[in-house]
Each structure stands twice: as C-alpha cells, then as structure tokens.
Length: 288
Image (cartoon, rainbow, N blue to C red; front, side, top):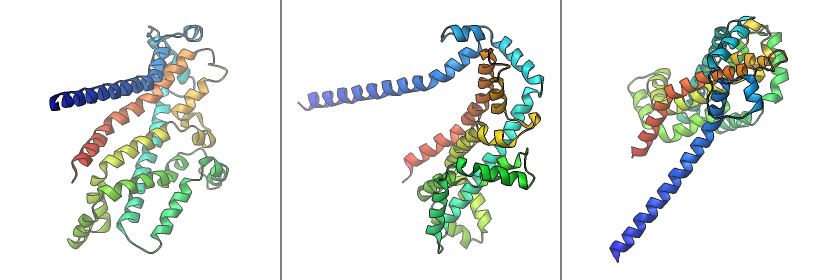
C-alpha cells in the first residue's frame, strides 16, 4: 500500500511539474513574440509589412539598414544618436543607483530622530507622477541655462525614490549591521565602510536596479523631447520617433530596423548584469 501511495504521489508531483513547465514555456514564448515580430519586420519591405503578417524573416535587412543609415546621415550620423543616448542613460544610471544605495544605507544603517519621517517623505515623493512637475521643471531648467543640455537628464536622476525603496528592502535582509559595527570598531570611515562593505554585499540589488534605470533612461522620450531642441543632441528614441513623421511614414521597414537598433543596448546591459542577479538569488537560497 505504501509503495502504491508513494507511486501515486510521485506521479502527481510529475504532472504538476509538467504543467508548471508548460505554463512557463508558454509565457516565455508569449513574451518573446513581439520581439520576434519586430526583428522579422526589420527584414521585410514596407509593402510586405502593410499587406501581410509573417513570422518568417525575409532578406531585406541590409537594404533597410542602408536606408536607415542614409536617412540618419541627412542630419546627424546614426552613431551620434546612439552616443547621445548612451551618455544620458549611462550617467543617469550611475548617479541614480549609487546615490539611491547611499540614501537607503543611511536610512537603514543609522538610527536617528526623524528617520521615520525621512522615509515617509521619500515614499510620498515616489507617489508624485513626473508629469505633474514637468512644466515647472522645464521652466526652471531654462531659467538656469540648462536648456538643450544633457545635465537636466542626468543630474536629477540622483533623486530616485523607487530605487531607494528597493535598495532599503534588500538591505534589511541582506546587510548585517554587525559587520558595519565591526568595521567602525576597526577604524573604518563611514564612506569607506559603505563603498567597501555595503556596496559589494548589494551587488545583486545594484545590478537589478542598473538594468531598470538604464532601460528607463534609454527609452525615455518624454523629458528629452521637451529639453533637447538641437538635432545633434537628440537621443536614439527621438530619432526613431522622428522617422514616423510625414517624410518616412511609408517605409515601415526602416522604422523596425531603428527599433531593433534601439533595443540592442538594452539586451547587452541585461546579459552583462544578469549573472549578478543569478548569483544573488543563489546566495539567498543557501543563506542561514
């Protein structure tokens, strides 16, 4: 009886595993379909894209790529748009993640009067949409002479309440305060303790937030479109949006190639940082 019961239980577990794996595979395929359609359309002509739907790549990728380079070169080379986006996304990501980690460290590692109010204030700021303050922000940037400049797109990234929230939640479970006390007893300064002890322990969370911050800044179209007026300073998403204007509306193949070029750096950043996320998950699984 016990053998039959164990066999039935084993079969039930196997069925549940098969169902879970099938659901995961289905959801994975479902999430990849839009990217695959975009890549396929980048290899097709504009006429084919408008007339039919296909999941099979065509052979017009290089032709669309050459057209994209030609259209971009009419004003600014394509690589310039990519460099502009990289400067903004890279700078804002570094400032956002580093100073958000430092803020979360201060709220978590130090017990001071007003800590609860400071945390509540940070959470309250997180609830305010960007669009609410966009007009005032736009006018203020031009009043201080930062119009058509990268600074308004990089410096304000220091204040990232959502990143602070994520970092603090991770620190509560992954940052032993005893290690910080030991470092202070050994004579380590506060900045040295933060940079040499806290930051390495926070690598999985930092990698995760770097991915989110980079994607958000790289894909940001709203704020750069308000502040950047010079063609030479436009970002890659602004250029792709420009291609959807009256002049290029008929050639969807070029637009899809531009979209593929836009998402490639995002994939590169993700694959470079994903190993730290996996390492952090594995570390959390064996932690006592």
